[in-house]
Length: 136
Picture 1 (cartoon, helix red, strand yellow):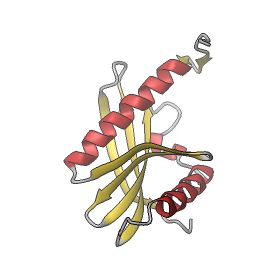
Picture 2: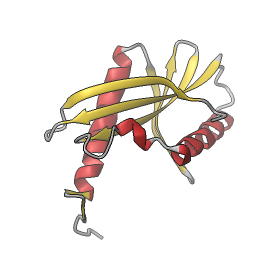
Picture 3: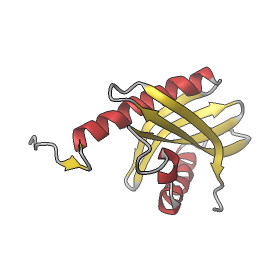
């Protein structure tokens, strides 16, 4: 059933979803240019989703992508709060248990923060490697 998009702070839900999808695509390309090898996108479990999973050298990286059309309500990376971090840690533990053949020397949580214009083109892209620890 198709429902009309609901306005949220001047944006429709559909436009927010589209911004997020474009942001994930741009983040994946950006990371590949920095030597990351993407092995998973939008990895879903019953309790959440990992935006990107990638190898960076011998380190497995769980990457949260935050894309915003402005910084009016704060920096995109500020949305990775305590609750989001806790969920990402839980998702990473689930992913590693589900893929026992992965032989990573280290595990890391990265954040890619994007601010995009009205057409979805990135105005600012920021990679925050090791943005938080599993014990945080």
